[in-house]
Image (tube, rainbow, N blue to C red; front, top):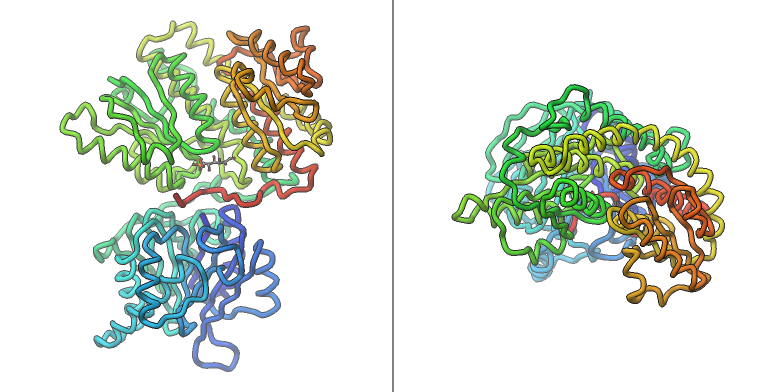
Length: 634
Ligand code: F6R
């Protein structure tokens, strides 16, 4: 997690850093800080100024406003605490003992204990509990060695010192370094954590994510794993991990990656929920054009060989992406007939199942930066590619909303869900985009493997085409309905979500949304599992939200809901209107659609209800406590 930003150029650095950090605050908001290098009025020598504040970015902005932070060169950081409490002394930037060299870092330095002991035994005193603080001390030590050995050109001495230190660091990190002795040089480095350079007019920037570059430039240069770069007012020098100079052409941000704006909505999350019809419309327009051949009903960027000879699929993901993967697994198994399993990426890394030949491994991550998912994919590709039998070799697909992310650089086949940037920490429109990606895959696999009749495929395609309009109507209706229901939850401490079959993952997603933004304890269960334990929790103060959509398990879910009602639970139904659904104390009506596409609609009332409950409680919906949008640490 954490977001870093760095700038060097002709303008004052502090306002640019603060504006970049504002766009990265979704990555962490426990504390924020910046360091600039410049000369105060009348002074000739450049000095380093460091400003840090606990809590949200506004606290830092006020501090900088009051005390200033001069210089045209600087680094900034917004923190999601890993090592050390979210206190000011643990906030980045961290400095060396002289106070003239500062570092911001995103990631985890796994061998920091060892390095810290070594530095402490040399008499270095530490000011924080963080893993990051070893870095400025190591760089300062390296600079001393280089100076003793006669290296004098200050820009290159900083570069060389960072190159040497990055070889000593274990773990995943992205970092930026400034030093008062080199007011014309900024050094950045990355390994398994994202970093993108932006080429602006009159300045060069570098940030953990592209929105921080928005407003300054559309021309970007994503750094590759292991690279170190020297940024000066004149240009960029890029080196790989062996120190070889690299030459690469920049790429350009699309307008969607550029726009980060709440429009007239109270929160990003609400705006993003309302953007879902557009997400669906775009997907239909891009992937369901008329006139596609019957054997490839969905336009996806893969050739025929991609679909051939697959015996099983395994999907690796975390959190909401994992719930989308579970719906995907249902579709791939039940519609396309391919055995499919879903794993928590964090578990798969250390307990992967025995290898099965001809396996497609799918990684789902909206950010494309989730450390556990990336590491699980890379572990899987290593163990498969080292197998003597080529039937076991790695075939991977990544589903992401960020085609410029680390995932896209790691996995060759990428399905871009194209939902546009999502700022609210709770994923909504990207979840919908991930679901659509799985419908596309399941349809193409089913068509190529003849696991479904052509008319079943045509029906599903038609149903998917109707989803954007259905979503529009549903969101308008449920926004008000959920706002009206929200006050009922003001004293609620526990909520149970029930679903079955293709809607079981939606019950899990409903519970996750509610937990993460309203801090109400919530659990999702397969409806038939209630009687095996969780039913003991039921009493009038525990609402049960049950998804009951017509299909193979409709009556079963209704009976499970009746069982809850018999225990005096308050029963809320996400179901079509009709005599069967009169059992619910409150109904959040959804249209009667085929079971296959029902998750695309049933998730919406869940999102809106969670949003309004949290907003009604006055909570910070877009930046819930302890969370961050992209989880780049293990
Ligand atoms: C929940 C949420 C998280 C993420 C999870 C994986 O609303 O956003 O549970 O889904 O951290 O993130 P990605 O999809 O970026 O890998």
